[in-house]
Length: 186
Image (cartoon, rainbow, N blue to C red; front, side, top):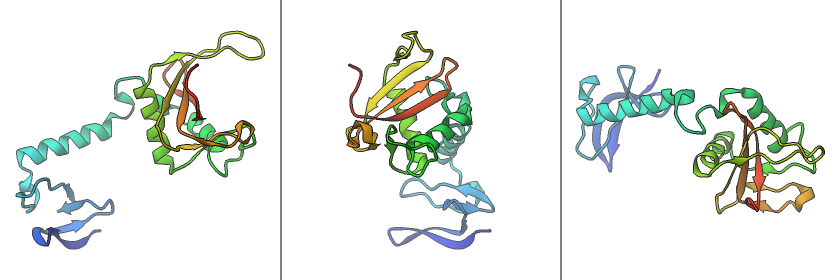
């Protein structure tokens, strides 16, 4: 149940009779209301003018896109084992963290967002060969440099700040792993 509020913009009341839902969005009669622009007055559910209705529809479509989205990142997180692998091996406090692992900084949502961005902003390359057998490995490698610190390299690699991410995607489009890097493809 929300708390009754009077929505204001610059000290001027723009909506009354709405409540602040748990998400922080204003709700009228239990339905979320998003006020856009300076001239809009939110008064109950009929206020959804064509522009606001279109914006709401766009948000709903984006939220429901998930794995039905198109592009190389569409199925990344369909297999939860890969995200667990990243949390266990490439996040501070993970049970598999050791001197050979680079670590991501930031909240989980930000790390996921950066992994998606890496795949969407870079061109995939075939995975490298297995260092022991020399055989080709399946999957596609994506690398992107954010130009700012996103984590640290492993202590074995100097523990320096890392600005890039390497993402390895399975042939079915699901995430295999991701870790911080400091150099791009050579």
